[in-house]
Length: 327
Image 1: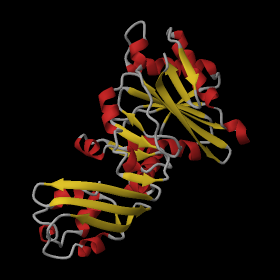
Image 2 (image 1 turned 90 degrees about the horizontal axis):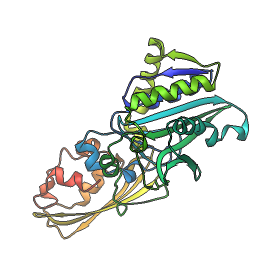
Image 3 (image 1 turned 90 degrees about the vertical axis):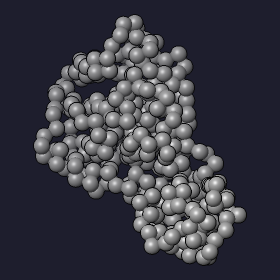
Image 4 (image 1 turned 180 degrees about the horizontal axis):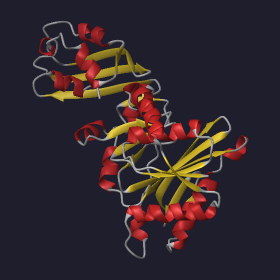
């Protein structure tokens, strides 16, 4: 087994690294890694329905879709992630207990009564500190999980606090749980990287064939290519979302009430209807026509509307206010 040491905290790079190791490195592997503040959404989720977009933008939080299913999670440097990639056969690949037991063993050594509960969670005193997910590729599994160690909980709750009334879709919804940081249960203070070292040492003991491996320059180049083609793109992180309907009512001081209704498929606005008590000089159907077949993305919407003075269609409305109404 390779213990692959990772130092990059860019979430685009780190999610691409998981796929690269799964598909391009034949050895079984174990990795520990951290992300700068980011939201990682499950493969089958509607990204916009999972995040607080205003908070995410204001705090420059990156949003990345992962290969595995499950719910959206918040990462920061106080959260440690662990990943196994291993070969196997059939249903033997799917075994959350196998890949979380090493973590529980480390916590037991530290005097913490941590437990495996439900389908794929680790808890302390009934509160979740680790959620886990899997992705199967050929005869290999990628099993990964979060380890809340000293994460900033207010950021976690605000970043994932999406408005449930805006969206109607069939995408997988995240289930919010009571959470806790591991650091709150330690007998003696410890930093997150000290905890990381303890886990790495335990894996070395548990797997006698384990050897350390540093990603090479060639590895880095190929991973960066994957970032450019997939993990750093709007098409993967937002456009891949399942079909959904979006509705929002915008109340403005100058234009009155404007209601936006969208049907979105593969991230593209297929249909849009705008209602309200606003006054207008020109027919607002012109704006609706301009936005059909446009990605549900702020930059693309602004680009599509660049030639229009929105104040002529919605009395005194600015482009900033209009775009706000679409998210």
